[in-house]
Each structure stands twice: as C-alpha cells, then as structure tokens.
Image (cartoon, rainbow, N blue to C red; front, side, top):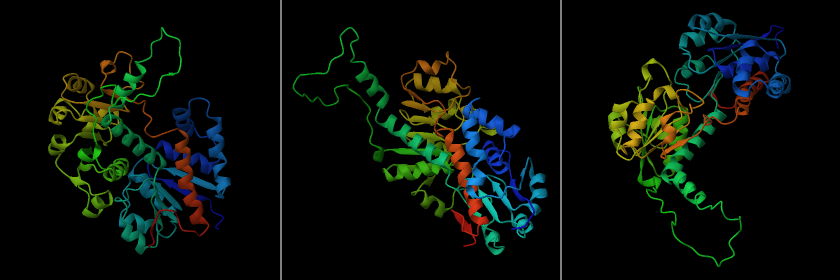
Length: 373
C-alpha cells in the first residue's frame, strides 16, 4: 500500500459517522463524545474502548485522515483525494464518480437505498460500490411488526385483564383445582387476523420496506404513498406493494404507519384532517419522529372512537411529559423510542461498515457489493 494516509470521506454530518471516525482515528473526538453521551450517557468507557480498538482488530491502516463534509462544496472538494466514501443521501452523479474513480477504493452506502448513486457509471469506471443491511433497520422492522401484531391481537387489554385477576388481599398461591378451560375468559374484543387486513405506509424506505416484506408474508395487503413512486421491480422486491394516493391509502388501511423524516414540510403532517381521513376503527403507528404528529388531533381522534388505537415509539418531546393527555387513554400502546434497539447496535453498524473497508483494502469483495458486477 502507499505511504500516504488512507483518506476516508463521510459525505454528511451524522452521529453514526462520528462513531466510525473515532474507530478510524483510534481516539475520542469532541463530536464523537457528544454522540457517545447521547447513546450511552456519561459512562461510555466500554463502547469507546470497543471503537478505539476496532481499527486494529480489523487490520485497518493506522495512518488515516477523515473528512466529514458539511455541504455539497465539501463533497466536491474531498472526492479527488478520497480512498473511501461513506454516505447515506448524497448524490453520486456520473461526474462525481468519474472525479473520484482514479483513487476511490470503495463507495459504501450506509443502508440499502442506492438510488442516489449512479451504479452504471460506477461499474463502467470499476469503482466498488456496496450497500448495507443496517442492524438498527432490522431492529426497527421487528419492533414495528410487533406493534402491528400487539394491536391486531389487542394484547394490552388482554394483559391488563389477566393482571387484574390478582387479589392483593389474598396470599399468593398456585391453584390446586382440576384443570378448567374457558375460551377468551377475559372477553377481549376486536381480535384481528392480519391476512384479512390492509396496512398503509406513509413513506417507503428501508425500515418500512423490511416491515412490508414481513407483513406481506403474513398475508396482509400492503399499500404505500411517497413523493416518488417505486419502480415495478422495487415494488415486487418488497413483496408486491401497491402505490396509491395518500387519501386513498388513509381510507383503505386498517393500520397506517408513518415513515417520513421530521422537517418543515412534514411538521404535524398527521393532523386532524389526516386522522379524519383514516378508516374508522383503524390504528395509527408512529416510529418515525414525534414532530410529524399533531398530538392534540390524535388525542381527539382516539377519544372520539374514530380511531381504534395508536402505537407510539416517538413523541414530540421526550421523555413523554407527565401531564400528556394521551397517557390517560387505554387505547395507546407506548414504547420509549426503542425501535432502533440497543445503543450497542450503533457500534455494530460502525463495525459492519469498516469491515467492508478492510475487506476491500485486502483485495476482497465487499459484502453487499453492487459494483463492479
């Protein structure tokens, strides 16, 4: 290998990229410290140790220069000297790939959506491109699927009904009576079978795509709405999802799951009109960001009985304030922003990316390699 430092460019500012930067540099950085504190609290010595020893364990060079781009101009300036590019959303046009091609050893997509990368040009220029199945995305997909099942089976009322049997005035003892069966002795109503129901996704990206494949396998009809419709091949790969206008999705879906970022255009997207357009008795799921939901409008839709229930992993202000009216409702299933899993999953994703870089530097094929063919 050359005596020049390995130059790794991160195309965007991202908390996960700051973890990878520390692993490459083998040291704590100010931005990395903020990220570790966010995920692990002030006691982050153990994950820091895992990160700072990762580079040597993977056999990566010790002489490394990192560049974290803050804007498009930074990307263009960094590409000619980049040995590796790690990105999530940045456009890699034919011109940018041609600029990077003489030196570039790997373009690593942080996730599976590579529509912003000109793969055809990368193949022509023989620039390796790889995607990644993010472990946190698998975790999110499991969690969202679990929320759908919990609401379909009415598990919260069922759990409360059983726990409500306990009479604290009596000493605890196990029954010694002969066995006795009584079907649905809790009187749980509105138990649903997924194969008879439709779920609609507002936004169809990596997490929602993984959920769609899972639920399609359970027999659910899958609808989606997003600004740019997927290609027929992409829809087929997700188990046969169907694009419909947003109003039609809301009217037809028994479950509506949100998968859009929080930004000015999506602020309180799920408002009173949104909920009024949903099918009566339907369920609302938000594991994206709290800011996309108007909590007052959701409360009114739930309290009035128009919606059957909601499952919320995110809220506008976290932890959820103690005086939040939604906490008074029995038809809201809460989880505390945990769909992405444990903080350790972020360390694992960092290692997955850097393992690919190590493989390419050793002359091996990257996991998830898309280019060259």
